[in-house]
Image (tube, rainbow, N blue to C red; front, side):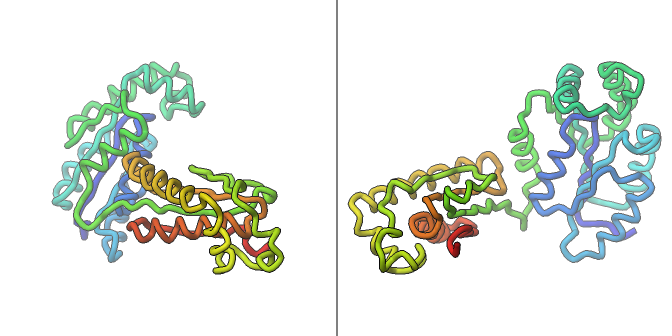
Length: 288
């Protein structure tokens, strides 16, 4: 079997956060697969080994696979460890009370529950996976971790050379009269600025045109407002990076989404790009 350069196998108790670890590894450039049957692990590794950019692989395996607790330990020792030199086995767990609460909040059934009370299903899984846990390179108790803290822990341990997580900042200009975008993290309302729509020669233009840009620059306190806006956003972005956000969406709105929001949004995008941020700009209502 042709092996990947680096393999991380994620396992552990149901509800302990395996999917969050997988998504974090994906953010770090790992090629991942969830709930892979044991019989398909070797064919999967052989297939992805042919991919040029899939030399670092993550796999989630757990009790959703039939007889996982009895089959996996021997398979891991005899097949995986002997073939993949750089393999890390992560075992995630949490307290019975925390796991029961998570299942109560999500309203999803525990894979071993069936006719059992949730606490008894959790304890049965914990006992069954004792040998798997003993094989792990890393055991992480996620009881006290928030989603962000768990992601930060994985980032710290698996930030490998050649992979850097970047945060894509999307700036959307829009018109309030056409409704707000639904997925905004930050929203700035610039309707307090004088409206170029009421200047006859500017009405057919947009906030991308020099005439509108110059009109706004001539307004009292416009530059003060924009300077404070830029400083505020530049202050916030590193804080969002600390929270391991991969995407951040900023909305800039005016009445029709054609003049003021476009000019301010584009200027903000240009200045943030110059500061080194990865920027996407969407002028949603500019051509209406």
